[in-house]
Image 1 (tube, rainbow, N blue to C red):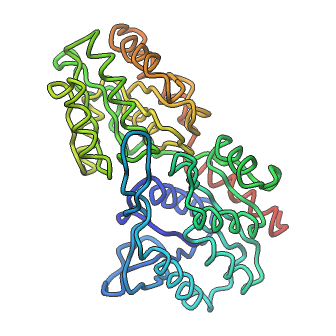
Image 2 (image 1 turned 90 degrees about the horizontal axis):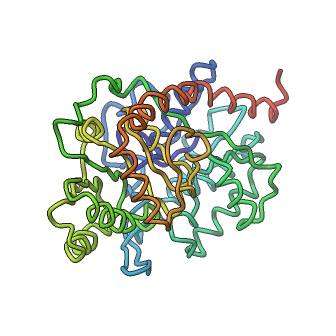
Length: 388
């Protein structure tokens, strides 16, 4: 299995999803050898003691999200890919093949475009079926203004694969409509969440002791649509001045968003956290009255499941994979700030409804576990290896 990031070294949902899949497959007695990039200067014990890992040691480790200027609505974001990423991917591809020559896999499984070439070459070398897992497309990341080089590598990866796993029907439709991939080649297997990792909703802080708090959590990039959260907050603030807002996370739009919030008169009710730790995230969920995910294009949205696991009512973009599995929450078009604001006010003012969402939403997704979803992946593997 070829991956680009893995906890504790990850920048977003890709690494978390990979970890969930690997551990879910383990429940089905599937042995997985992970092939991960790792800085060449790092020596000593593996940071992944629970996993079987082969390291493709790189001269310079490059994150998948770094700097590239993209015109996006009213501001320029420096985001996504730095100048050395192409070199890092080529080095990863070459070295990953070198360190896996002795392995004899039944399936080659690769996650997102950075690993597709390595997966394709490995599958040809070992003469095994290739599964390409897509967690987010270049179109999602760039407001449908893709880098042609990235787009082509994604498309070639999809063409090379025997089967494709998409994290949502939303993503499957993008692959079919924009990449020209046959729908019957694409299998939808939704992401999951470890609900047991979250504090039980009954242990949440008493909301009556604090002003209402509305939470945004994610990277501050065009894909996550953070500026829309400001417009929503402005509408809610006009109706309920006591409501507080937290924009949690870091990203290229951080400074711009602070300036915009001040210009919109939100300086006294909007808090920007910057980069935060896992314990700090959990603390915010414990205090939140509701969670808003206004993403422009969200293949899935693991953070919405995380909010539900903590007993937080959610308002999410219809343009998301999570909207396919969340039945107890509000789904709104990403552009409809008025509707999002109305949903927030409804949750804050209707205690009975808010309580119902807190109790029923976690129950409704209790079976959406990584073990269950990994079972679907195993079933797909068997169609390729022709095993019963």
